[in-house]
Amino acid sequence: MLALTRAVPPSIPRCELSHRQREPIDHAQAVREHAAYEDCLRGLGCRVERLPELPDHPDSVFVEDAAVVFDGVAVIARPGAASRRGEVESVAQALAQYSPLARIQAPATLDGGDVLVTPGLVFVGISGRTNADGARQLAAILAPHRFEVIPIPVSGCLHLKSAAVWVPGPSRPHILLNPSWVDSATFHDFDVIEVDPDEPEAANVLAVAGRVICAEAHPQTRRRLDAHGLATISVPAAELAKAEGGLTCCSLLILSGA
Ligand code: CIR
Image 1 (tube, rainbow, N blue to C red):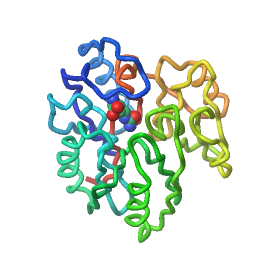
Image 2: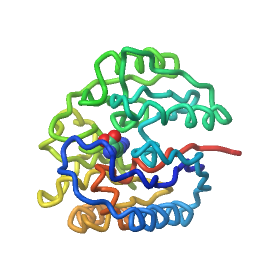
Image 3: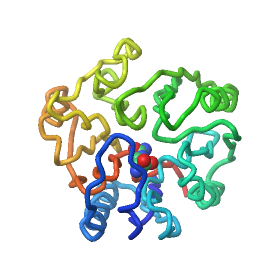
Image 4: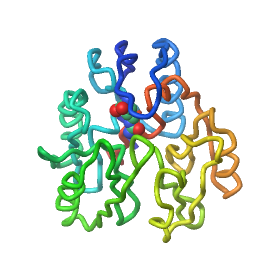
């Protein structure tokens, strides 16, 4: 497994914010947390490769939003926030080494954080960042690859994956979700686990190599995952959370023989 990441830029205090009040972000602390995240990925067997730094793009550490990687095609996104569109080209260049590319075209918008990939079914959040045209273009790109795309409304949070994430389990696959932000009935084919009500942002966990990476700030949700037989691990992520970043958004994972 290859994990593409990007350094936390010093400009991160000027990040986009949609649902959180702006508060000071300690760049050095964010860098330490990001290093711990990369170490965690390495510990789980990933090769971590950093994309070129983009110091003047405050949200450039959140590489997930620039693309979505599928078996057979990497879809280059068109972020809903205009300030983030300059992040995309370097991700496209890196992904071109591993996969054919397809691109979401204007006026459609699509953020990678709105794309929840499960085997055969791809849920796309219609959010403040991703529009219906973005979901339609993604469906057209994925049709030959035998993925069905299901658009679903998201409200109260930034992206679909702020609200719901797929977690492969020892028996049935799970969806960890916050029912206030997404309709849990959408996921009737999955074993739904709800986040602890005191931890509304806890759904954004990252499943890698049979483990589930959780944020240290969400111990009660982590206990719920443990109770379902999932093997969890936690990392510090509080500083990047002030920029509305979670755990999925700091990497792009690629299954690669390279
Ligand atoms: C933004 O608003 O775009 C960034 N401040 C946070 C992006 C987080 N991305 C993600 O969860 N996929």
